Length: 251
Image (cartoon, rainbow, N blue to C red; front, side, top):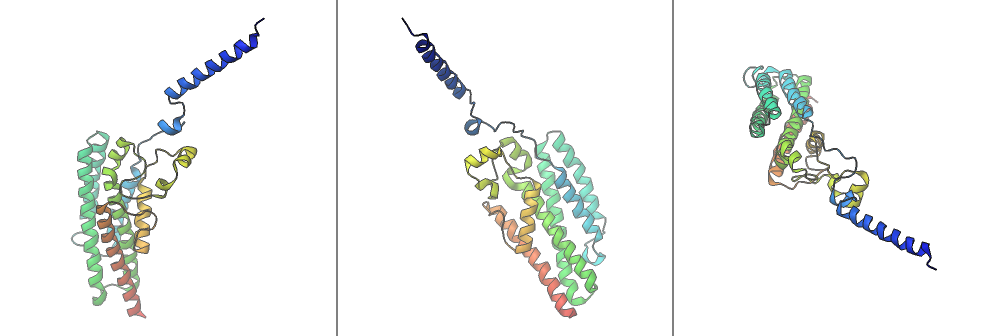
């Protein structure tokens, strides 16, 4: 007499083996060959960068007239005029135009920042500004320096936010963020396999570099990032030295 269970049990094992093999071919284990379960790959929000750009224009208007080259309204109007077509180019899918306009805006506000810092340095020996006004102006320029270079890092890293989203690459090509140093098993566990930096991450890099005069949170990989970092540190250090020298002169 044949034992029915001895026949059914191997059959079940065969069916289970086939099911497991089919599951493997269909990438059921998404931790190795696919995106983590439940992960939604959303485009990077751009309103934060736009808000930072408008803040640069607002801070520029708040500066004393002696620290501004030309009329006060020129830079804010320039930012407003070019921001509109930049946003429209992004929404219409004209990414090359969007990138060119963004680089133009960043270049102009960088030149305006450097000019204002030069006027700040010249204002110290001439005693044109009151100590409190000079201190406030230095703080405004220091914060503007952070915003301007955060926009540069955000705009240039990995070809820009649009190209970063299209490539769907993990991490950054120019900076080593802490999230990039997490082991693969940890990335799978916390479902961050598709993590990419956003504007806040670049803002934090710019803030730490202006505060400590060197990279702290994310080491630098690209040469363009190192050159921009050197420029940002020089501007920040100049502002700090000016304020310290003025404070010593008042005492």
